[in-house]
Image (cartoon, rainbow, N blue to C red; front, side):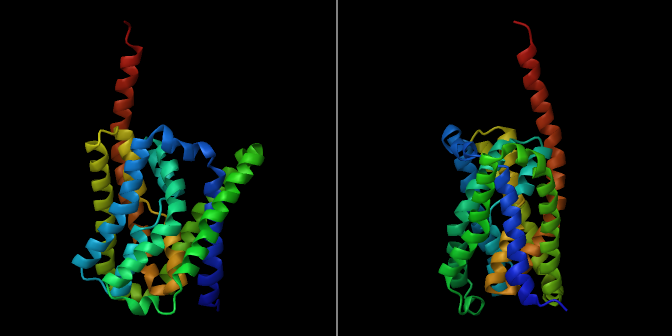
Length: 299
């Protein structure tokens, strides 16, 4: 029988490193420079992702009176960055994929700070001291850096040096990343199956509520700020399709119970994300068609 410690301590971090490396293969420095070229969209998107999402997790965990460990796991999920799946869903929804990629890249780097910060705040608020017993948050920061930012940076470096090789093999890496994501979620579910059964309905309600509210609020904020539908779509997808692998792996560093909200969330986000992508793809297509008609209209 495979040792659970080996899976949580070695296999899952290695899988996340591969996923982040793959994300890096699709990034260039221009994706970071876009912050200065289109500051409004990026700043509003990151504001939603870095503040609204974790704060919503706090509120939902409190309102539903989640067990401290489950509450901590939900906040960890809320503080996690977007991922390549958010970029893919944004593309399917005909949203602004470039904005999505930029938010994913920057939020992945910011997660080295935001995840430990919100974990510490949640631990204090929900009195979940038992969950963080003997946990050195500096170690969490360092390990999060090693399995997220470092492989992402290596992927970017490989792309800058061997763009032809990357163009050839990136689709393969993307497929591997999707498979790894499903395996990570499956491993998290199987490792805590009994606890998931005991807490499923309450955690499921919290995860689904977080997903729907995060997408709805972020889309609304973006539109009120007069961003386009395509930009608002990208921001909402980034809030709805978190990088659950990051949440699961970080949870595994602390307490396996914390993996449960992210594992349950990962199941729901495909259904809600797909429904939102379907609706927005039609809406954004109509907008694109109308804009094209205006451009082509003879003067």
